[in-house]
Image (cartoon, rainbow, N blue to C red; front, side, top):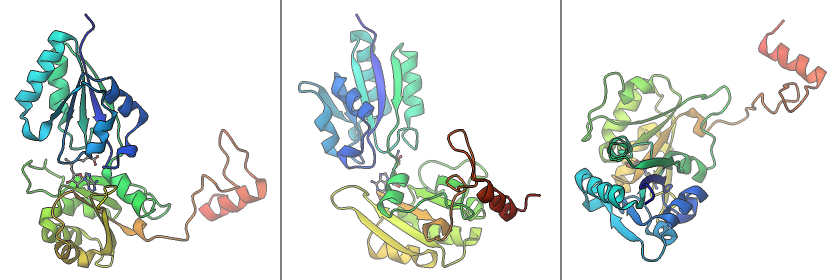
Length: 269
Ligand SMILES: C[S@@+](CC[C@H](N)C(=O)[O-])C[C@H]1O[C@@H](n2cnc3c(N)ncnc32)[C@H](O)[C@@H]1O
């Protein structure tokens, strides 16, 4: 008998064609598909083979998922555990990976398109614009069901004034706005609010930070919503050094005069 296996598959933000080829292949090979109906598009199940057992994890406890894993270990079954976006972000996969390994199952994690990159793609903005923002903070507001570790408050991260992606925080939009402002973002900082991004009823809104809570409240956005904030969302007129004619790397020689100009620009001797 072959060993059972659990593959944790990132389904992407919604649109069924935003899953990776590897993810779709893992679903197609599975005897059992466990998917989260609250955040994963039903269309993703179109990859499952006829006769596969399909179960919705929304109605299941961890213990019930583990029962399935036990069955997979006993019978050598392939399980595709399908999570929204990328499974390594707020996917509760750590505990499932541990249980699966303890049962002697093989495991694999297939990455997915996270909702924060899907929102950036929807508005066609780069999150890491040269000289404006070179870091992206992925976080959530404290006060939900899961306590935040010390030192990880939205207010503390906001002090960096780089790009931030706020997951799981829409239900407390007033607190979110307050914390971001208190941390140091100026009131006019651009925000993008993405609701059910890449689903049929996707809604994308842009506003200033001091209008964030009002915008979210007016549109009744309290779940399935991600907020991007930071100056990169409006920045223009910059260019990266990577494609500068004066920059050289393993695949391209620098143009000598452009290289001199670039060095002068950087203040190099
Ligand atoms: C439990 S977390 C899962 C995150 C997921 N693993 C990811 O990489 O996007 C759920 C949160 O992700 C965000 N989210 C997931 N899918 C989304 C979508 N299609 N549009 C907007 N936000 C989404 C929301 O902030 C939601 O509250």
